[in-house]
Length: 498
Image 1 (spheres, one colour):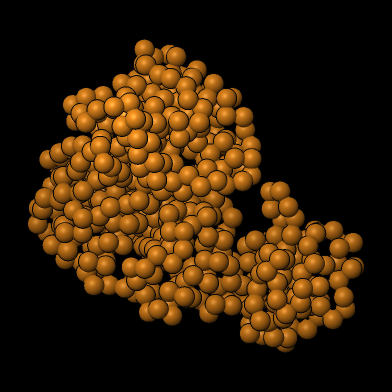
Image 2 (cartoon, one colour):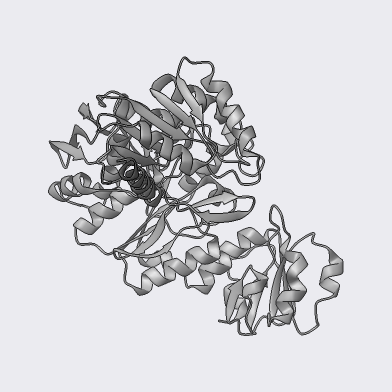
């Protein structure tokens, strides 16, 4: 594609060189550059792409995009035959040129975006499963994986891909004639312009709580919420949770948009009534297509009702029939979300991604009321993230669980003992029984050893993840596999004793 076509729609650009050259690809990673590519220099948190311009040119880049205000010494080293494009914000420009290069693929299908602190993953899977049950071709992009027409094509590194990768995925989905794409849209991706230029048909806000507040993410809850609302500026057709303090503000913030509501407690257009929640499912009554229907969701917890309502609100806009909705919601399962792990001992063991105070409280409370025996909670907190939530989560587990085993999560570059100590501060405020086991596999083993068939073991925090991050390296750690290994290990020990 000609460079001048790739740059369509960009504002405030300055160009030195030939705009008629053919560009064979666009990259923001100098290591991926091939002959004829354009390199877009992005200033990140730890590295500055402008420092790799020479490397990109040596690898074959024929054009480079730089940010206004970059070091002029770098530009002086660029060869005369290389076209230089200067823009006010290269990250924002990356999104637009990616849309242009891949020929605006999101205009070729219905695009559904879901944002919020909790519930994004489950809600997107529910929407996906309902649409597929209706015979539609569906793509999904989110925290766990990317799917095209029912086939998993890749595991995810982040909730929302970088704009260049996102548009490439969209292009592949359009090529596969996908009719609907449902995606999780993180606040960080909105802040960093990853979805800019994408044409959303419906957007959803699930809820907001104090998560992702840190130096690298959002400075405070106000900025966090404002980042989420960027999605509603991109689409005039929205859905919001009327029971959420922040969700209730959305309609007033966008009076010119079509914003519908869902909820349980506060009046809303899609309202759940006669709610029943057990340890294995949730059901409720709701008016769908003008008739009161009873919906049963095969995932326990009150939060599952909110996720289901959001999904119903979306698919109703596309005319999906009631029986299809009911059937899909009954069968839906999401990896790492209230996921029961089958095992030889038939012990109730649940893996859940709960990694914030609210999500931990939700999952513990969801099972506490219905488990005949004890709730045994194994959890830790991630390193290099919001430290304020650690004692809060310790207090929550100490208050609700019958026994807590404090352990590691993704410790990243922090000392695990320091993280655990901060969690312990919270649990000490309760009368809850607890134990510290730093090694997460050993912590899981400890929980399984003490569990009976009447108990419920909750492995909280990692969910769908299959790796543990320690000092910049990722090590294999799939809790489904760990559970099976531990049970086999304990079985072998018992056999030897006999």
